[in-house]
Amino acid sequence: MKKMNRVIKHAVVLVAGASLLFSCSKGNPTSINPGGSSTTTGMAFNEENGFQVSDYAGQPEGPNLVYIEGGRTVLGSFEEDLMKNGDNVERTVTVASFYMDETEIANIHWLEYLFYVQRDSSQEFYESALPDTTVWASELAYNDPYVDHYFRYPGFRYFPVVGVNWIQANDYCIWRTTVVNNQLAQNAGIDVPEGGGRIPLESGVVLPNYRLPSEAEWEYAAQALIGNQWLDENQTHKRLYPWDGHALRNPYGKQMGMFLANFKRGRGDYAGIAGKLNDGAMITTYIYEFPPNDFGLYCMAGNVNEWVYDVYRPLSFQTFDDLNPLRRNGFLDEEKGYDKAGFQSLVDDHVRVYKGGSWKDVAYWMSPGTRRYLAEDSCTATIGFRCAMIQAGTNY
Image (cartoon, rainbow, N blue to C red; front, side):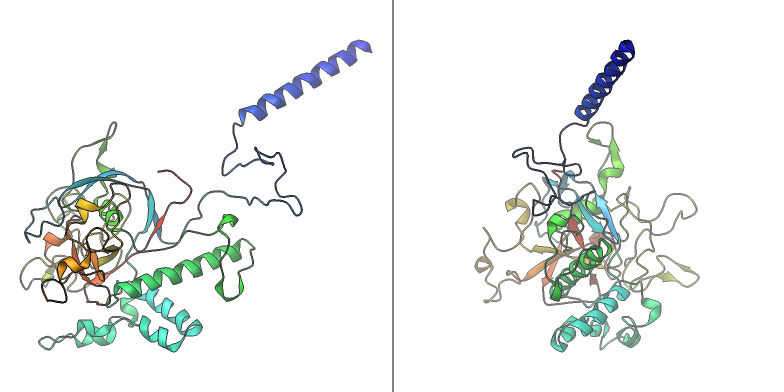
């Protein structure tokens, strides 16, 4: 009997020791596994009237977003500076990981936005959110069908929305953040505050803000040089476009010879000849029409140019930080130096960069390093946008 008791006691010690070793093997607390109590006070988490630590399994997956792993890159034009602007000299920077819409925002997405804006906002704001369909109009062309049908006709649902200025695009990002986070909170059983109040970030179920990408993020995502990675921190080559090679046609498989983007091939040539259309689109096209780049992003060249967040300055690449660069205003390059009031320049603190080339542009503008600008309250039939989002809670 005594021998049996010793065996039992020995077994208990072994089990206890194994449990201790197992608990030690779990390592230090993390954001996803914070433990049951504070490592500095010893007080338990989540007790009644105590400090509450919500479950967290990582940043929720946002609809339409693709993960873009950050890293070092060289911004600036890999193309000859045909315009002689000298505003995109090459510079090495690092861009943190982020998320970006895999497609451009389409007409159906903007119609959805208008539906909820009309229901929940003032008539004045609703009218301010309407895209300008007259961007298609021309006194010397018969574009009337696009003016009347492009935005609302069902056949154009998944074509990129145009006639939207930078301010409207920014408002869309704010609205999208609210509705997506409200939906995530409801799915998690969290009461959404009345009037659209703040859902606590500490809950771990909501996303960071949707926003327009910075110019650096957009250019980095368009390059997609992750597809050229070789061995340890080596890239075999850079890219002129968001795909390999200097050609504009697909060199592989069943799609060999087909164009890789929607652009203007030459003077008066928007689509080629009947029976053998080259890019198959005289204006914009389906947002999933062409193969995605190595980050999984569609139409990062051609179709429509895209608004980015940055205020335009010709010397941005020489003055901004080399980690997560962004020009948000005229800091260190004030607008008064450009004398817009004296008609010596178009540059001020209300002109924004757009990138990517469009259905109406020649191939030169599809190179990710090229850049142009337009007043933030202006719009055209050639500019759309997509949203981006930070990757929160990481150091890369």
